[in-house]
Length: 377
Image (cartoon, rainbow, N blue to C red):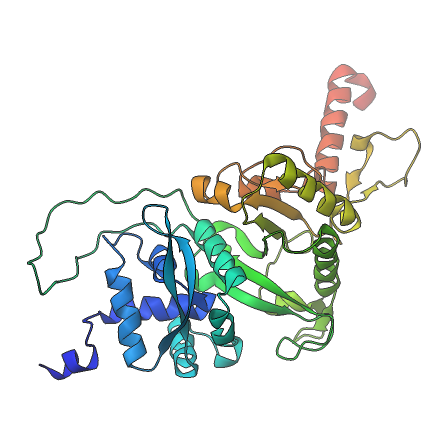
């Protein structure tokens, strides 16, 4: 046996080990099946990822301290081990992700012991938005039978959004204090995506498992807005939003958007009632007030002015089921204040802005000029 085989008894490759470290560095706790979906959905089975997790455990970088029952390959619920990082694994994952160790958070060991139901749901949502494309891989060599190379059809997945390195979980939103020491009353976002390459510079994500009353979810939206309003001086002495010091999004006309993803199966009517209750209880935080150069008039029409989005938290909603089936670019996002679902970028686009108002005014002037050329000469 060579020294390399002694070091990695399960014969995993450095590439796969690095991918598993990176995934656990982001999501903190996951099953092997989830890890496979996140980083290597093109593998023929779970063994490639499982071997990497075991090799990392032998090296003291991962551990499996809990179990959960989730749907297996045939849809039947089966017991699955939960994998997390050790403290040494956190440092290794920080290197893979290119992040300071202080940004890595904890190991989620205690959550894994308790089954980590919410953390696993967050991982499911990240996977459904990410939709890592399946790529062909070499099968794992077996001692009992030779590997037979034959063409294998890869699973198809819808187009995804961003890259795994662009995700963070359990993100502190300090209404007071700092990112490393948030004050009491601050939130932790379930997840955050920065995908500038896909025109989504920042997207906060909350995963709803229907374990909290709608009023509490609405209060979270209010706390998001409170955090988004915080200002800090930049190196030039100008005040900028605190969130923008970590995730710059130049040109954003509102506060960052918040995606509310419903992860639990429920009847359409029950889900709609919950969405309606959250929407109404949080209306003050996502509604863009109407304004104009003449102020509000009783006889004013909507297109006589525009909607002001500067202090608005755009809230978009969908379900985990829809994301898995259609991906984030499908017509699955319904924005609070709108009645129909749209693809992500459409849902995030503001309607009836001041720019839209000026465009309408230009068209009105052009129409009048055509109707009365002498009067506009």
